Image 1: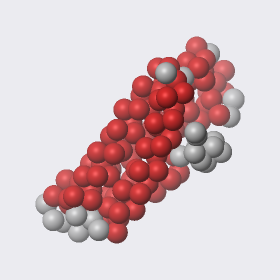
Image 2: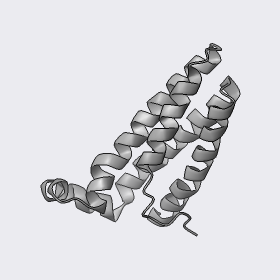
Image 3: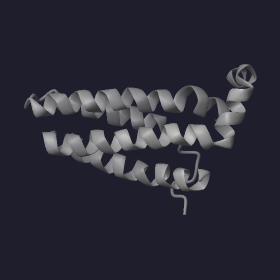
Amino acid sequence: MYEAILFLHNLVRWAVLAFGLLALWRSRAREGAFFAHTLTLQVVLGILLAFVSPLFQGALANLEATMQTPGEARYFVAEHWVGGLVALGLAHAGLSQARKGRPRARIFFALALALLILSIPWFRPLLRL
């Protein structure tokens, strides 16, 4: 189950980035909805992954040591998911602005996409098969 959710989480990442670029390029409600809702799916998969991931569960079991030691475990426990949740809020704020026809939707989409790019673990395989 862990491998299947990890594969989906990895695969959906590319859809999120593609829809984020599309929403940035054409910041209308339809493109923004694809971005925000695909990112919502990504966050749900990430939450499921946290419950079944041996790395995440092991880091939570020894949280104090994990937080004191920089590395992969600390990144996933403290930084990766926070960036995803904040980006999700920004994407939905952008969708709200796009539905109202306001040009500042592009700013929210840009901020969400920038935060996602910073939150992606680029040190991990880019595509898991």
